[in-house]
Amino acid sequence: MLPIASVPRLWPGATFVCLGSGPSLSASDVSLVGAARRACNLRVIAINDTYALAPWADVLYAPDEKWWGWHGDHVSRVYHGLKYTLATDGPAEAAGALRLNFRSGGGLTDDPTTVMTGGHSGPQAINLSVHLGAARVVLLGYDLQAAPSNGSDHYFGAHPDCSRVPYESQRDVYTSLVAPLHAQGITIVNATRATAITAIPRVRLEDVLCTPWYP
Image (cartoon, rainbow, N blue to C red):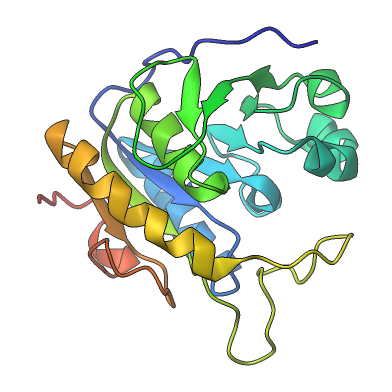
């Protein structure tokens, strides 16, 4: 069984982009993020399948053991950054992922060994970015709704098991993040092209990459 890891504060004061896999995420937007990462103090957390669009991301966060069973071999071949999970063993361990503890519910925890689950990987990645030192967080691919064109839950289509996302039960958790982030002086904005999250201010991606911005 993987031991519990403690997340180091590697990038204090950095802007983090958290890449969710919502259907509005595009390769062109990820390329913009990649160019900005090379040019300024920008760090990137790829959530689940988004590592395939961003193999250069600083961190891969994939909490579920099932996901590692589907993708662990490919991750081992193409992704060489930090990897975090909530899985206890198996393919995640074989791929070199570091295991975090978790607590149910919304909000944030300051315990660097732990993330609040918030019901899905999106808020967990935000909590991880805080542990890593984020001063600003940009959400991209956080649709929290199906694509209006074809009903797809993800930019890549369906998971191998064809599971669907319970969006309605996941959206409300973002409200619980606003106050604790503000209390720590951390700004969060949502640059997702099409999103059902209403608790976090919307911005254009182009306006917050390598550009000074403030609450």
